[in-house]
Length: 287
Length: 272
Image (cartoon, rainbow over all chains, first blue to last red; front, side, top):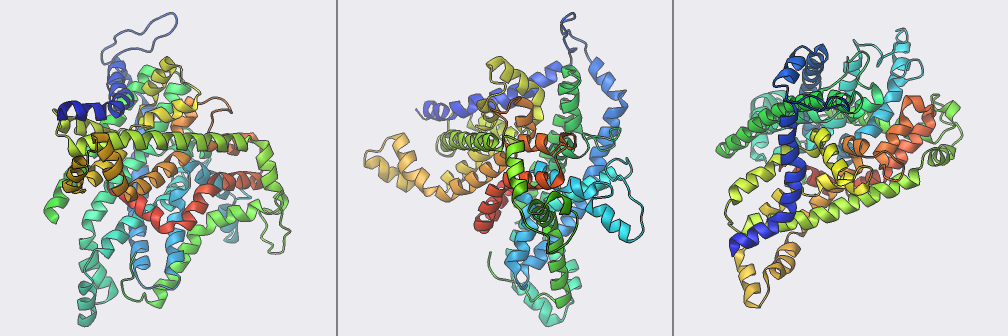
């Protein structure tokens, strides 16, 4: 009976999960070996031709490089800031709840709204950034229109959006540390910096690894802001893999090539999943 | 979150405050621009006249009322379906060692990594086949069986002592009666945490709703906001600020009222 009941309870969820996760993942893989069908030429098997096209597509490599640069540009900064925020908010600070709230607020805003707010900061001449730099005599600059500055601008915005979210994990970790450690350090006369470097930072390592993997996954999944800020431009300078998939599928209507790109994204996510899984295993040993 | 830690040195407290100020600046600036006439939005005159005209304009420039309705319908529908489906599946994994339950659970967890928005091409095709393109059901359907919800409820149900279940059985409770009368009431904090995360996520979700909708009658707030705020729409910045604030305000107000609950729920969601 338990077999029947178990499967009966699971069936409604299982149908939807298979229909919108497993089936499309498998179909994506199959599609990547076929050409995109047109009215005149139906879709046919092309072997690895799509993958050959992928290897020869300079935009694909640029986009992948952008994803890497984006991850390297945002993640270490977000993590460092999140750690700092958590340590501050964990201390006795005047109006601590208010400070904590300010740090966390960007987390609950939709990326589209965030992009709307920041778009104006970066607008040439009337934007806040241009006004600030004008005080130092720097001439007006098209921050989002220049391939050299566009990624930096988006990275700053992403750090603002994500640091507060990572902060709560550090805060939880800090609160689980025994208070005796801090007391002992105080009696020994250790400086705050020394205590952080030799005690807090190493003890936060499992949290850091956890946040690192999650942040990397986010850097592949979060592309909403590109719709508002740059549309991947100028000249693909700010394009990311998922946004490129969207463009190929829904602007260029090349679904077979979009599937091939999706396979790459799935492979990357799978690799990260394995990394995350091994981290969880390690954490069990750590305790 | 309990009180702990040393007094922060004055310098650090100042830095913490400065950072907090920096962090609220974008939102504060949007509020500033939204309540002043467009011509004054970029000038910082503390005595500039206040106005609500920008909110009125935003409300009429874009069909915000309809977008609000769509979003509310969407998050309600998704949450209701998630609660039912994830409760049943979570119960199955927590209390029935059915054949293949380990493999099935592994397959469920795949969705934690491969969210529906990654598979936009195939999922769009499926929706086209089902005739669900440009429907609110089409936006919500891929999210209704949530691996995160199943996982969270399985963990919670597992901590509930079997003796309670046995006692209810002796009283003549059916299997679903046990689930409804014993497991669900005891898992209330988990449901609350999950509901907060689910509502926040779908209130803010953008990519999949953008792809699957193409009319005012189905577009949720985020998609409406993106069309409204796009530079080519030509709407001035004060009005865009007002529209953006309107779209985020329900969630923002809820967060300001229930901060602690929000932070704890988001943390649970992240750790999984």
